[in-house]
Image (cartoon, rainbow, N blue to C red; front, top):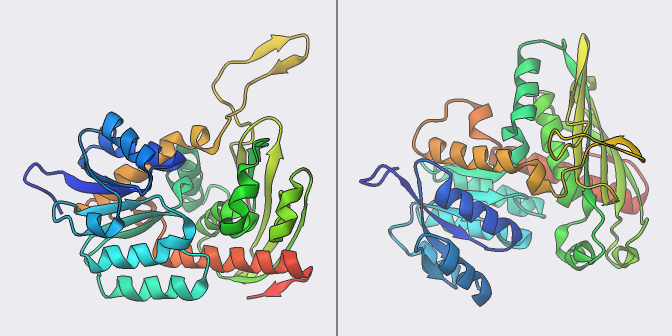
Length: 346
């Protein structure tokens, strides 16, 4: 879908911490995109959009944005509990839709979205698993596809955030779905992607509250570990943390029958090395956005290209709704295992 100027007209919905980043990418850094509308129920966020973005039409209500005939596609950066219905509403309004992960925190809702998308095959619907677009992860994927490490059978992957003394994650815990659905869901998607999309058979998870005691009220932890058994003898091992001192440390390892690949083992902010009395070191990426800034940008460009007919492969198109459903299925099973203390068979 293109306008007379050849650009896809987008409306971003949700202008919080990550929504602002997406909005700026779409407005200024994505060829073929025109950010024409923005929506937030928060007046301060609409004020930000008025000052920073290139004269978008501003809406406080999502339904009003969907009624805008000059919006071809919506970009959802909203609370997880809203995702499923907002995707359905966008598809019924004839809009292409990109939505940040997760698809939903409820499997029945995931299935409902997939059923609605099947009724609109001409519309693009994508979930934001941006690591597939990170240059390093993409290079690893291409090497695996080329047989460089033989047959991959094990992934070890972690998502660990710098400790937040402000308590954001505790306040977020009531609606986050827990550490495995909020953090490890990215590692789950990466593992399935790098292993050839096998189906999970059984999972086991355990966790600890190291610093943030307020998480106990929600049955959550600030550090969790998990094992996932897939079909055909493939395995994945996951670690998630909210309490790292050094910064956001996201990395993965893929082990195959003829070699292995490590992605991001040293989370470097840049290529500067510091030599002083404490030793030799480099600074770490402080947040997930600093680590995956390029991935978010490539993801946005790929979505626009997909809508305009330029994407021809799964690697280019990113995670499907079915991929997102499987990540949710596994994440929910990990949460169940954490709470029960027993392995869960899927």
